[in-house]
Image (cartoon, rainbow, N blue to C red):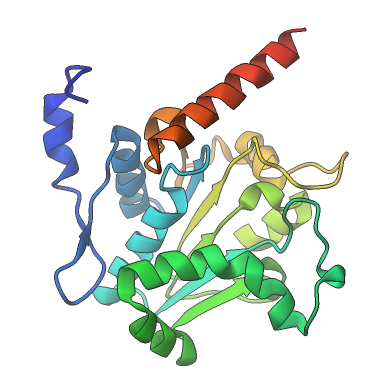
Length: 239
């Protein structure tokens, strides 16, 4: 930011700290887009974050959910994710339903444990205050007084996305995250996330935030990898 002449914006980042525990631990945005993302979540009930891996979409949404619970703004956190990745099918995995879906939900547990610690997180999960479930478990429910996060939304179908969006109840927020360059749906199936960009773009109260490779906050090589793949895809589409 300083290199680009944005010293003031750099200062503003530190004013957007997110308390995630009672021990005065804070999460702070690291890019201008992350700051806009946090502000959008504060102001809107539905926020959709789209961008490459490592840009903090899910992590910051989780931080905002935990912060809302710590401040007693909501009474429950619900974390959902479609059980579909890299062409794998649940039927081929060993174990019962919970054992089958657990590997898909692991990234949500990791972010939760990182912010709150394993013991406190496990207690809240056991009490039902934090629920981590596959997207299919959302059908037929109305979620009031909740902060709901849908992760990996690029792998939802059109029907699943509509079902999820209509679960929102009173005094609730939802954040939907996804990377539209990593869709694992079968060929010919429209991504619910991609479709939502056109369907929902003019609805007041729904905010879209777009991340780029500049927002990647993982290992420095991740940013280079994302940029290299984008260049490769542009070359292929121009042929």
